[in-house]
Image (cartoon, rainbow, N blue to C red; front, side, top):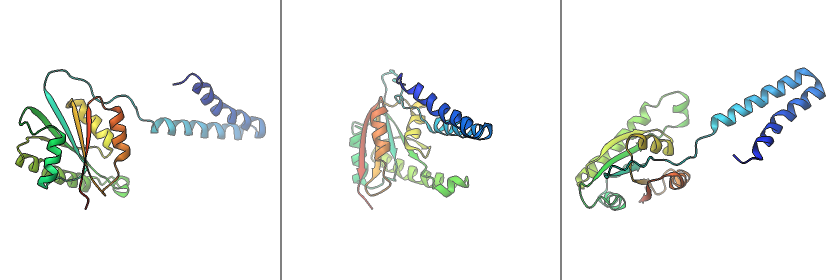
Length: 197
C-alpha cells in the first residue's frame, strides 16, 4: 500500500465520527462510528488477493489445465483446444479439464447449487469424452463459480505450466476474468473462443 493511503483511510474514518460528536453529541457520533466500522468491514470483506497465481513446481512434467466455460464436443472445437494446449504430440502432458459451475443469483441466494453443479458435470463429461476421442486423456473437475477462483483452486493441487481458457462466442462474457488470469498467472495463458450459438 502506498504511504499516503493509510493517513487518508484513517482521516476518512475519524473525521465523520468527530464531526458527529461535535455537531449532535454522542448519539450521532456513535451512530456514525458504527456506520464507518460497518463500511470498513464490507470493503475489507470484498477485497480479493491479487498476487500471482500458480506455484512453479519444477518436476519436469508438462501439465495443461483446460478451463471450459462451455461444453466442447464438435471435432473442430476439440481440434482448436488440442492445438492451443499443444497436445497434438500425444501423451507427453498431464491434462486436467475444469468446468466452473455457473450458479444463478436466485440459486445462490436459496443455496440450491445442485442443478448448476449437475449442468457443469454434464458439460465436463461431454468435453472430456470428446478429448478422449481425439486421443487426449484428461482428469475432470467441477470448480467454483468464480472463474479466477476456480483456476486458483485447481493450481493448488495441479501445478500446470499452461492454462487454456475455452469460452463460447456470444455466451457469457468472460473477458474480465480472462484479463485477470492473463495478468496474474505464472503459467502460460491462451484463450480459445468457440463458434457462437
